[in-house]
Image 1 (spheres, rainbow, N blue to C red):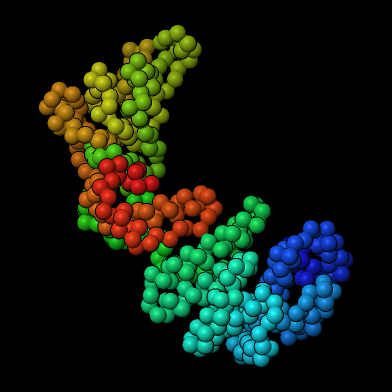
Image 2 (cartoon, helix red, strand yellow):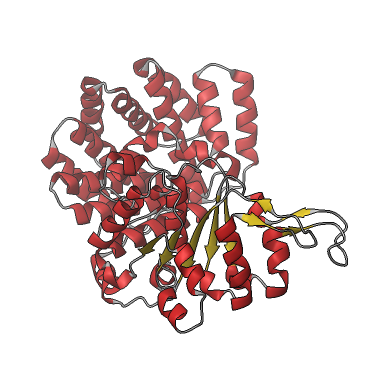
Amino acid sequence: MVASRLYLAEEVLGRRALARRALERLHETPRTDVLYLETWNDLFLGLGRLAAGGDARGLFDGCLEVFARLGVAHGERLARLGLLAGALAAGDLPRARELMQRIEASGEASHRFLQAAEPVAVAHARFALGELEAAGERLAVASGAIVGSPFVEVDWQLELLRAKAAMRGRDLTEARRHLHRALHCRSLLVELVPARARSSFLAHPRFGALRELEARLGLGAARHPSTESLRRSRGLDEMVGQSAPMLALYQAIERLRDQELPVLITGETGTGKELVARAIHGRSPRRDRPLRVIQCACLPPELFESELFGHVAGAFTGAERDQAGLLEDASGGTVLLDDVHMLPLASQAKLLGVVESKAIRKLGSVTPSPVDVRFLATASMDLRAAASEGRFLEALYFRLAGVELRVPPLRERRGDVRLLARRLLERHALRLDRAVPALEDDAVSLLERYEWPGNVRELE
């Protein structure tokens, strides 16, 4: 396809040597019927780009000559399709009407590609001219012709036009369904492009209408409808939800702005407690300093002091030099004690001394060193109850819970399930370089009825 596009472009521009090289590459490419049809398709695209950027009328004869050299049947009809695409891209509606009328006057094509491509192009022109009923009729013709054919480029344009038609009829569900299919077809095209060129391919102007409609239909997960300052804040952009419990949580985070208080974040496993901690840090005076996360559940008691406080050379076998601990490394920033309830009592006692004094003593040293950190902690259990039962140090609880925030479980904010599912699908579709799958209403209803004991992590 690349060789055919290059050949067409170089021939029309009169660069014969470059055209010869492209033609040699084209002849070296093994062909099947489908590949040959895809070559036609690519010639049509290349012609459309040239027509959009230059004198469309002057290109016509030159393009016909190129098609003849390639032995492409129905070359005149293909040329007109490309010229129509160029006229629409340039916003030349009188020229587009003239070309559209010539295409319609040519009668039904005998080739499968033209049988699908011509009504799609005419429908596009009819939409641009405001002739909606006639556009719908051509879409119906194209829908029948495209069935079972391999013309993915035509397919995504057809689905885009269907989505636009549904939008005009205010049927947003139908519009999203067709837009999803258009995005899927575009993903199939992306797979044919070398990985290094995919970003520029997706940014091509011909996908502009697709991107615009995607934005209008709000396929991106909605962010919380809070204040403008909240929307601009760092950290909160990662949080998704519009339910009352989530709005209350956003407001609580906003009230902690520019505070230095320790915060205890509680909630069930998988609710997103670490995201809340990152949002708090992102709105604090320490936002430009590091946030260090200490996974308390993974910290063996025998390594607790060395990991958190550091050690001096000779403190134990193998300690050949001084080593800074996590708390010293986070100086000026924030330390998140993730799953703090998992610390054994002995480690809790050592941590309490640091939280109270804001000083550490490295393993093997007798001299305390001050540390400038703010403590945040998460827990998936009731620490007050654990303290009353002797499973957690009460003094440490009160030190960490300067403010206590509860992250609601997913079953208490079922209205956010659709938004969360959409965000997760987008994230993984981006990772896999695929179109974002559509969420049908019955699927969302099923998700919303489920109890989600594993919360957002289980949903993902």
